[in-house]
Image 1 (cartoon, one colour):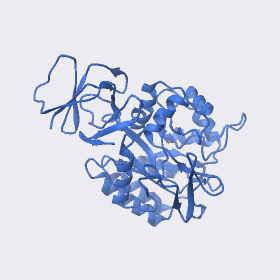
Image 2 (tube, one colour):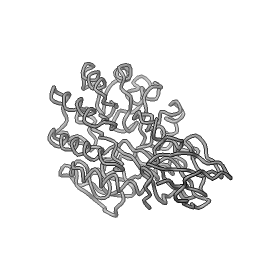
Image 3 (cartoon, helix red, strand yellow):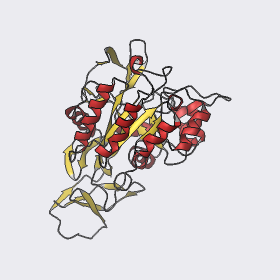
Image 4 (cartoon, rainbow, N blue to C red):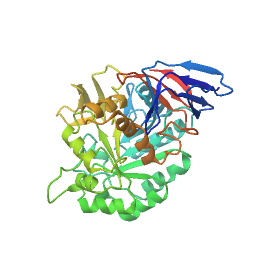
Length: 386
């Protein structure tokens, strides 16, 4: 059905337009309509509030849970869909359900679930993110060290075979490059797996070698990696000094100090920083705790922590991250929105149909109030209120 969305401002991914309307149909954006022009064959006109803003739907590459569901505990199609539905209320129209370090059987179940969920039209599930298990035993964070290991032939065949099972979907793997040989990295990337450095003790030199091979990302910059020192810059220093990778940033004010976030933005080329939530089951609920691998995670003062205070994911949603990018980092609204939509689309290789409002792009949109809260979303042109 063709719909004409009128009255709101429109953020195209580059600039904010006033006085325009948006024509959508068959799940796609058909036209940005200039003032005074009425396009033909409009079935329905939807009047929006003048102060609201239409923007590209948010994309989140690191989502462990939401709506009371943890993907590690419910690695099923229903679990993935429930997580996507919970985050849609906060403007996220596409995400990668993320399974952290766990057993091989749990990883395989999660992969099968993501394949089925991603195949459902309008699901919002874009693939899967494996955060581990091929990480440094010294930088496990909240991951269960019992399941940390190096990849074997079965792992490489399994993960490398996933992109072919998920046409149009994406497979992202966070790993410690000092724990995986170059031949394995190259084999996975040749199969279509996107690789990201994280939970690592690697030297800066080893991280740059991984970038040279084609590793594209850095998972939650600064977290689960050594700090930067003048003669030992480490993974974070490599990420700041090398312009090639995309870096994820948890902008909750707890994982990274605002000054360090500003330093990262100043050092990185425009377009290479993305907002991620690293969200856990409490997102979208009033729960004050949940279980992860038999350990209780507590929700305290905007943080999710183990009993010893170790951060365990984030109590964050994407629209809050967008607001924080303005208040904590001082970014213009347009750049904050790009970090939640266009830049992750580019990282995932999906910028030819996501992350912008332009003719031919997917009608995956978020409608924001003037205070940057979410009024609702369209996924493939279908509206759902927040």
